[in-house]
Length: 146
Image (cartoon, rainbow, N blue to C red; front, side, top):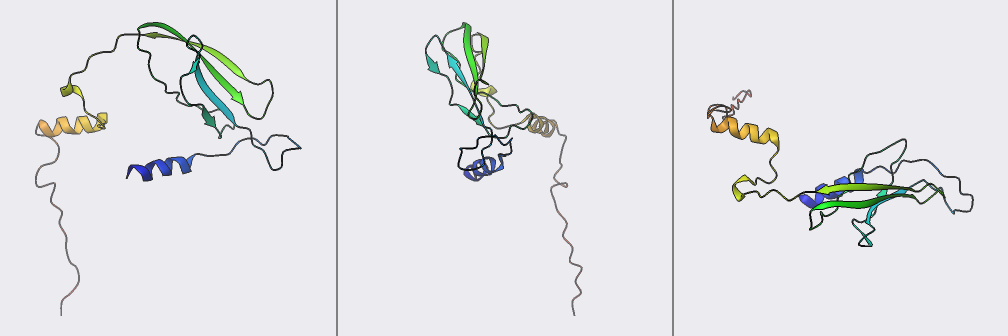
């Protein structure tokens, strides 16, 4: 089930962007961008570069990378690079204040449950929600028998 969902997500990503003028490229070239996060102090890339293929006017992406082991202020560099244009790269400094992780007991962990499902669960526990009569489905047969 999970594999099908991932394949559907991959297929649904658009590849519509602007066409780039590059007369020596063998086929039509679209502008694509790469974004990634670097820790310059450790000299390492914090995440796999994210390939943006659907930039028409603007787009929003989520950059996920692991949190550091130590608390304090950390400085990262976010790079946005074009594979089509020269001198259009953007570099931004990102400062994050890393706090100590909150300890969560196993009773508080509920994986894969949305806020709406939690409210439904609370309603069911409080005696609200569906009754046993609501769970029944009536099926009628309108066909005539000879």
